[in-house]
Amino acid sequence: MKSIKEIDDALNIISTARNRWDYEEKQGQLWEAVRKYPKEAIDYFYNYPEYQFSIAWCLAHLKSKIIKDFFVQEASNKDQYIRWCAYINIKKYKSEDMIEIFAKGLRDRSSLVKGEALEAVKGIKDQRIMKELNHLVTLKSFKNNCPGYFEQANKLLDEFNGF
Image (cartoon, rainbow, N blue to C red):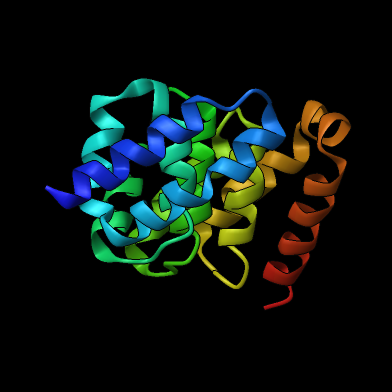
């Protein structure tokens, strides 16, 4: 099957990377394979844990129902980088059914995930979001460790309270 061969070839190429820069140069073929065959890439994600981040990173920048459904599920992944990819993708879908997922992202222990969740909730006026934002800005650790996100959360609260 052509899709499997293309993904296999791309994964074999990136597995030979000697450093980060070499990896980034070699990742182009994986981007193309994932773009052409997202369903098969999702299968690879589950079957080859050593390539999960590479595959998730490529999928995060695509938009389709199958990818949205995949990332809604992976928003609870134990790996913070997979959750980060999930929120990069799902922040594109601002609908009522996503609000609880965005609120969960604001509660995440990873600052990467919180940052994407903050981007996702821009313009959403919902009490669940306001509750999470209020909680975030009371956390001293959040203020000290994520000053940019802390400022962004305060700005969103100000906008929310202005309505």
